[in-house]
Length: 256
Image (cartoon, rainbow, N blue to C red; front, side, top):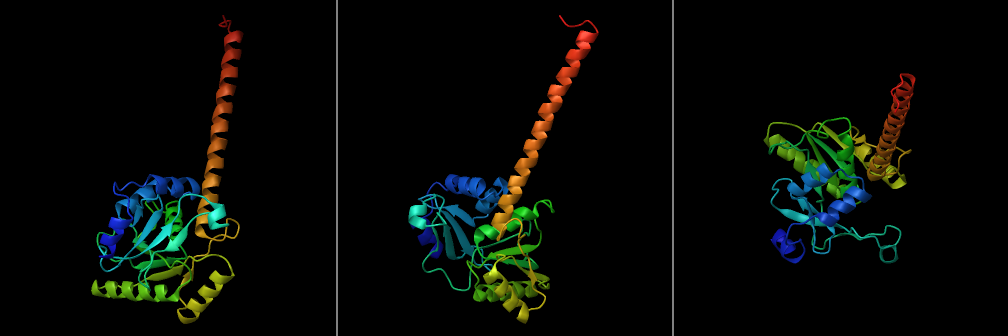
């Protein structure tokens, strides 16, 4: 019922994702492959105003939408302050849930690892960065956004995922917190680890930024810098080759 009402009232009738795609790719550094995959999996859609809707699918029944995180794609600092974009949770979203997605290729199985983040974009950024080390991205993992630092979301997904795995004759292997590298994030990690000592802190690099999207954007800049250097070397090599060819032509009397 929630999803039916949502589709009727908000979701783009033609299932377009052009504005969301442009914002996530150009401004947030997320790869086109990851954006397309999330859209294909129906966890990321565009509303009638071009905003990104991150759907909170029930991990036990992926046909049920329990809530929505909305992210604007148009920059307006006068209206939205320093952040510059709309950011909110839809009314009537179910407490204890959040945006989540599983590693591709699970084929209906429940992931044995969970990683928690403060926002949908941080969760997606972490997964996108994992593609640098693992082809296709981190495997066998559930990525969850808490939309902040919400222990009830952490507890809910640990319980639900562990229950699902138990029914499949498997167990939860690892849990990680990819929350911001700031005082609030560190306090949250300390609190969780005081009760669950094996939970890992997947801390963003202090050199690259306080969250995983900052880290991804910094990585993209480094990639662009390396590409420019390669292009420059190719250009210089081409110029040097032409100089040598011209010299040989003159030396051998081939210059017209």
